Image 1 (cartoon, rainbow over the protein chains, first blue to last red):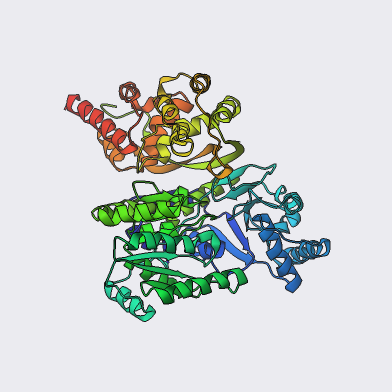
Image 2: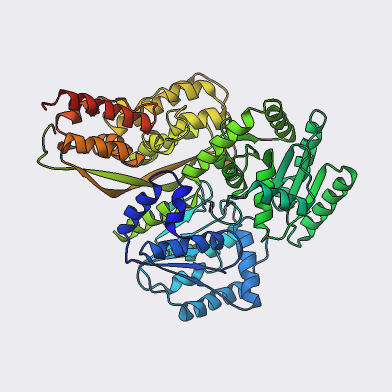
Length: 395
Length: 212
């Protein structure tokens, strides 16, 4: 996508503002480093951001680190431990991770004015820093990191010039300045671009989702953190008063706990034909897009969450949100304006009934949500923050 | 600026980079103690800066402290007492800080039950770094100034009316006598678009009165 294509979706003047801001870092060399080019999170955002920055005259490159199986296994365990999960980290495994990143540092061209290293896998590259400013961009909540993992990781993190977190409160203790840049959605991506009503109908038909009654839709991994069973219970409370259909769409990622939860949900769906459970692959962006557009109300009843952008995606599609009070959801949803944050199954059912009983609120909140996202949660805002950070670091 | 100004007025927008301070409050007593300790820039961020961040939706609480007391702690009485604090009424950030601490002190002396929240619902202190963005627009006459004012990014309204006026304590010399009238505009509990409207109104009056 080219920057000019965002004029039709961004707030008026936003693109001209970006062009003016970019003049201050034109010609600077910017390097992003991630643990891979595929998947969501940082890679998803960089696929859109890197070409735009280059178009704006900022010399932008994107490198990825690699290694053997032991390297990836330790990197995954370290990441999980930094997110607060209990993991066994062996001395040998950690040493291997450091050594492999040492090899990566020799292989990669790390010469840049600003180097931004994303998440934990490539983080120890900083030990090889020569010139320029180095930023550690953390996309997860490390406020509850396992103490031993954090103590190990911190000796690398403290070598950066600054760290960036998705929201205040997600940071771990560091001796460097810590900034906040919330993540955003790309409105022109396959997951969020406009779909015609016909496209939506065709996709829902292919998914086997009938549209003969109001749809309550939750998109998210089949994990306890997203409380799909709580959503089913909220739906049952609503169903006593309104003839609605519930769609739960997501992935189980092959993890035993999630597969068990999915199997439980499939049993529920067999007993109640108005509960539809869809196991979708991670690349099913178009299907998620259509489901969110077809929804009457979108649910995101997470009880534990990082900074998932499901609420922002749904608000962009003009849908009111009933979301759990967890992680970034409370930051995305403006209660009583773009939807509601809830703390219980009963709270979710109450808010869904409130919206269904006052249908004029649904388009009003949907429109407010779309404008809220347009101003605060679109990739154009992330470009502004990224460029401003570049100015701040190189002036 | 009734004819051609000696120095052109240059419109400048801004981006607010947010820095988290790893300083947190989980109850009202901690909020009071931390307000007393954090850098003055953090007091600025959570009071004056509120007007930049909440430009689109609502300024219902007036500052981040009042919002937290209402939404997270559920102490409506404290929220009301904090919400009416008009930061523009204080000559220094230290005076504003002192006033906020006094409100919390008085409130806690009232013996109301203190509620403690979990970490993720705590008050997380921040401060900002303003990156200025020259917008390439300048004005030498009042007519040019009006055209620029009507068109510039909202962040320029914030920078010229809140930041320069409060953090740097200076009025823009290029504005001449209009600067004094601009000083009297009350930005408290309103939106940047409304401030733009009021500024345009003052410019229109000045244009009407200007000799033709």
